[in-house]
Amino acid sequence: MKRKDFLKLGSAAAGLSIFPDILSAKEPASKRSLRFAFLTDIHVKPGSIPEEGMAKALQHVRKLKKKVDFIINGGDSIMDALAATKESTQTQWNLFHKIMDQENSLPVYPCIGNHDVYGWFQKSPDTTDPLYGKTWAVKELKMTERYYHFTKGIWDFIVLDSTQLNPAGGYIGKIDEEQLTWLKSKLAEIPSDHHISIISHIPILSICSGLFFNKTEPNGDLKIQRNLMHTDFLELKKIFMQYPNLRSCLSGHIHLQDEVRYLDVSYYCNGAVSGGWWKGAYQEFKPAYAVFEFFNDGTCTREMVNYE
Image (tube, rainbow, N blue to C red; front, side, top):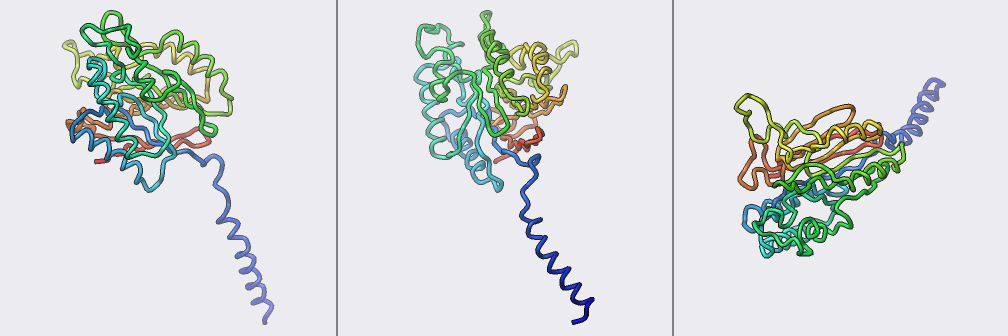
C-alpha cells in the first residue's frame, strides 16, 4: 500500500472514530426544555358540541407528534357556576371529570377561573353554604390552596387566584392582600438561577383586554374593564422588576390571543378551547390551545393549535 493511501485510510478511520461522539453528544444545556399544553376556558356543559369539543382537544394533545410533559388548565373549566344552581354546577363538574378521566393521562396543574366560582351571581346566594365561592372549585380541581407553586427542573411556576369579588357587584381582576404577601415571599424564596413563570386566569397584562368588546367607546377610547385585566398591574410590575429571572405570565379569560413583551417579561393570552363559548370562533380566533416550550436558558416559545 502506498504511503499516501495509508494516510488517507488512517484519516478516514480517525474520522469515523470521531463522528459517533459528535452525533451522540448531549444537547446543550441551554436548549434542554420542558414542553406543556396550556388549555384554558374549556367551559364544558351538557351537550354534544361542548362535550365532543373538550374530548377532541384532549385527544389532539395526546396525539401531538412532539409529546408534552403536562397540562396547565388556565381556568373556566366549566361553563358557569357563578349564577348556576347547585345541581347544575355539580352536573358540570361531573362532566368535566368524566371527559378528563377518559381522554387524559397527563399531570394537570389547574387554575381557578371566574366561571368556576360558585354562587356569587345568584339572586339570593347562601353564603353560609360550605361550597360557596371558590371552595367548591378548589375541591373539584384537587387543589390544596386556591393559589400555589410548583417546580419543573429549573422552572418555577406560580399559580395565582386572579378573581376577586366586587362588593358593588361582579368581580375584579387582582390578587388579594393575603395572596400578595404570599407572592412576595414565594418570589424571594426561588433561587436566582431558576426561571419563573406566573399563571393567572385573568391576564396580568394584555392588549386583548382592550379589544374584548370589539369596539371603541362613543368618544373613541378603548376600554379595559376591571374584570378583563388585573387592576393591580402597576403594583405587580414593580414587584416583577425585582426579579430578572421572571420570564413569562400566562393567562386565558379573554378568549383572544396575544403576546405582549414588556420590561423583559412575555405576557401570553392563550385563547380558549371553547372559542366563542362553543359557538365557533370568537372574533377572529377559533377554538384552540397553546403548546409552550420552556428552555433552560430562560427563553420560551408558544404555538397556538387550532385542534378542530
